[in-house]
Image (cartoon, rainbow, N blue to C red; front, side, top):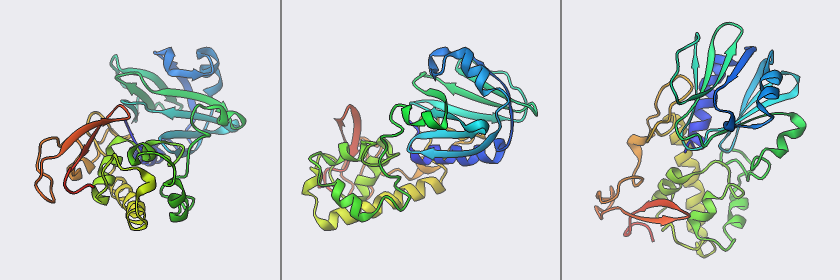
Length: 273
């Protein structure tokens, strides 16, 4: 699933291409991906809207449109937003087309069809499921060490807490595994039992890993690409994720895998305690 670094990269890559363009028409090929409004109203309401800005909240991408409209996109597991200078042919995994007045095109592709799109006015943004419940953004001032210290007092194992979007917006399975490895914390540890030193180290590790991942333009493990159809580079720097049985880069102990919250969880049994 595209996480904070991937969605941030997509936002920035698209901003350079589609900002201030006007949507001439939209073509919806898979209606179930449109969560609101119904297909006819979606097509009608997005017509002639100009893209005024692009924002990211957690794993949501928000295209701010003219007339106080918002195109909200959640990429699910395999969603892609790809820009083309002209109308392109497309395959069975292309489900929504946005055609601009200058003949350029934005395609929404999704192999597994777990993504979702909403077209809502400013006043209705709060009704997009999950959007208004997001916790602080890790790379903004609202995510302070003081806030994080309090959040860790909740009764939860640390991986659950970090994955919960109400505690912290944008983290997913890949980056939580990598963050916990660098911070030397076992994913099953109760968050409330972490020492002050461990909490501080974890806080700064979150900032460090996300910063590096954004600089590397995200992680392409399966099919992630930015808006220009370019893959990320951070997969070259992964220390534990998807490295089951391979030696730990620090101590050479084989990397192990368990399932937590329904997700494969990779860790070093010696370094992380």
